[in-house]
Length: 280
Image 1 (cartoon, rainbow, N blue to C red):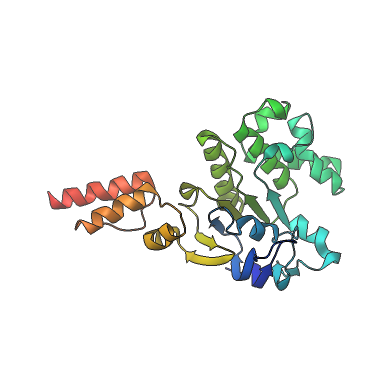
Image 2 (cartoon, rainbow, N blue to C red):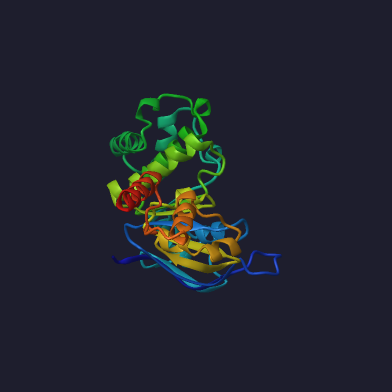
């Protein structure tokens, strides 16, 4: 697949800080992929995300998004039409008193014709499963529903890339599942490039790729099963691994022939059952 986001030796230090938040990051994200970025608090995850649509620009090095240098001030609007951002608190992104008006807000500000706005609003709300709530007041929705409305507002801009910066941090388990399922749908059904920033291990299981950040540097990069299999690294970074990874690893250590890549609960159970039948 072709690259769509490229970090080239990117350094960044927040004003007033002594330590760098990004320390020479080299990274390429491919078009149409679902990439999860994992790390402890202060690892640089949100700083990385904000470099993807020029909220922040590098002190040194450069970031290219679909060939656009994020430091090119003349192309910032063009860049932000390509990259939609969803943040932790959906209340900070909801600006209207009716769901469909909120989703229409960004296209209206981009000068999209009214008939096209109507089409985009309806399509975006259907995509995130919120069409039936289009006339509801956002403040009466659950946290997961609000976050899906915020995602619909970004989708209505029709970006090529959507970056979700810890979008489930303030949600309960059901809300988290709704948002994660929506993000995967955007990538797999619509072909969007999705960058999902999180500190929840289970939200990374089905990603095409998992990047672990540590103190502003890339500590690991690969398939989720490969990264989680390195339990020494995960423990060093203060990160847990999915329970399925831990269980399969312990059973392999006990002599059972089991794969590393079955991270979902159903798949893990199937592999254990298959191995037990083989031994029976």
